Amino acid sequence: MKAETVRQVERFTGRKVAGTRPLPGGGVGRVFLVELTNGGKLVAKLGPGLGAEGWMLRHLAAQTHLPVPHVVHDDDDLLLMEYVAGHDALDESAQHHAAHLLVALHGQTWHSFGLERDTVIGGLPQANPPTARWLDFFRDHRLLAMAGQALAVGHLPAVMMDGVERLAARLGNWIDEPARPALVHGDCWGGNILVKGGKIAAFIDPALYYGHAEMDLAFSTLFGTFGDAFFNRYQELSPLAPGFFEERKDLYLLYPLLVHVRLFGGSYVAGVERVLDRFH
Image (cartoon, rainbow, N blue to C red; front, side):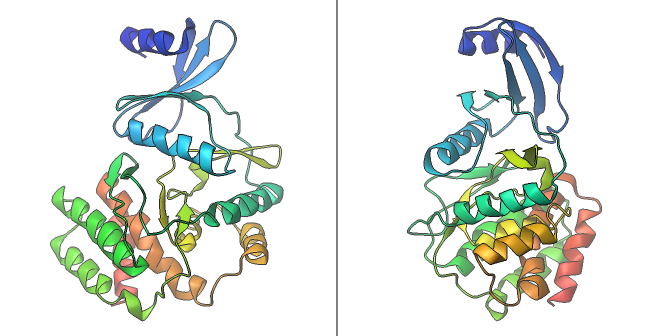
């Protein structure tokens, strides 16, 4: 960590920095563990979109029961938050706990789909204009918007952009309007879930908006985050409508796949192609 950043940390915390070291992650920016002279520890993130991330963590802490790190300072380039230890596996007990937490989160509602401000996902802009219908919001501000970002940087072929547009026009064939908007974490995979002693210690890196609860559930299957223990307990608490695993899961997975195409390109393009082929 640069000396200038160390001085910023000391100014915002009022404490001296004893040492720093890089932490894993930070696919968009850089992440450091900061050890303070009083024995305390912080996480410092450096990169784009951090003011929005700090706002989202504060929002979750104030408005929900989802465990998140306490934010010490946030601006556009620097986010300081408490260090939360949590490197255990997502065992059955932790998955049960996650199910309870996400059902409660998804119980938070709003008058529209979207959010009171735009947010970020993986450092990318994520627009959240209040929208009356879920299908319109998902089509315009998730699928088409992210596909457009991926196309603009040359990661998504134009022929596949055409395929996304054709699928987006027919979403109503598979997706119904939910009863109400649900607050979703928005980036729900194992790397953003800290586990300690069979419990969820914290959710990190949110990409908040009011959408469909199934977005979080679909996202969690992208890298095999949750298994039967989670989904069985979630459905005991909040049953899913028929067709989620058979159809809607893959449709909702298209958004995180497009995010990864925009960020990384490569093999994720084939994942988008598989979804488009299935629903052509």
